[in-house]
Image (cartoon, rainbow, N blue to C red; front, top):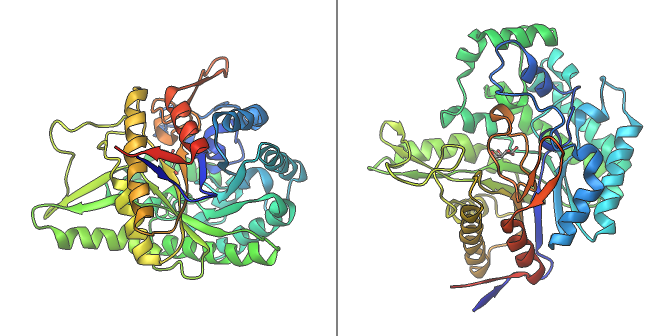
Amino acid sequence: MNFEFPKGFLWGTATAAHQVEGNNINSDVWVLEHVRKSPYVEPSGDACDHYHRYRADIALLAELGFNAYRFSIEWARIEPEEGEFSLAALEHYRDMLRACHEHHITPIVTFHHFTSPRWLMATGGWANRRTPDKFARYCERATQYLGDLIGAACTINEANIASLLVNLGFAPSLKKLHKAAWWSAAAETFGTSPKRLAPFLYSVSSKGIDTILRAHRQAIEAIKSASGNFPVGITLALQDIQSVQGAEKVAARMRKEINDIYLESLQGDDFVGVQTYSRSRFGRKGLLPPEEGVELTQMGYEFWPEALEATIRYAIDKTGLPLVVTENGIGTADDTRRIEYIRRALKGVSSCLNDGLDVRGYTYWSAFDNFEWSLGYRPTFGLIAVDRETQQRTVKPSARLLGEIARANSIEQP
Ligand code: BGC
């Protein structure tokens, strides 16, 4: 028995500018990578040199069978100094969009994927009430230049990431950060104080959350007013939050803090982008480690592809919006486990569709093995391996499998 996906279903892969382009030297994260005692295990350097190799890369994705490509455009390149816009950078992204269309690929563009221009940090970053105006102005300029070629857009990638990282123990609290030597060194480099420094990935204060949500709303308005004639939404990092040992109250509080305050503020959006990797289990005393003996991914969390079905149902229940799976994937050195992960995750997507839920697409994270933020190049999420010395691309069997599924627009049901 085969399960047929709806006609026009978007099948793609996802990347983010900083993680694949290389030499994003005007961004805040580049600075964070290089400060004294940086927690980044290595700098991003040339990354996958996608900034120069995008035409061959997009052709490869099309050849594999994909009909969509989700990538981000880089604010730090488009507006390298406040109010100064680079036509050359905009033209670069215009050519990426052109390349997508030449290969019948729908481009899904993210306006902000974790990195911001360095100058934004000097002016209070993601905890300053004027940042939404600045972000909206950049979105408007970019839409004026690129809008006619954009297929769909995400304003902000994982608006809730800082809250998720802190609550799930992947990042220190703000209090601890403010005392760290590397944080002070970074603040000094940006020309601000440790307490005022607010890069996106660490904006977990209530001011930060409010700034990010307002930036999203203003960006949508700016994109629409610049005649952006395509669906616009946001993406959220949604873990499947489960309760064990009667800890429903603790889990509910976590869901509220990490997911619901964001999901409940999306009325009027065209879709919601869901990004899911695993589940988190909460007991009465808080977050529980994965159970003894369960399979872990390179990221240290549980191999749990079923999380995707749960978060799709959850997000649609909370928002009533059409949904695109904008990220889902696994960091593993064993590609057979990636194949298993993809198969099981897609089974979950098909079961949601069977129940009549409005899921419009699936973009696997990631197209390439790339720069996994503070963990550097060790975790390998890619369908395509990249040799760091030669930049040679090697297609993994999982890429062929997902490409074939995309071409067939169906999966085999056991
Ligand atoms: C982010 C990506 C990241 C991926 C894998 C998501 O949180 O959007 O940038 O590489 O997860 O950890």
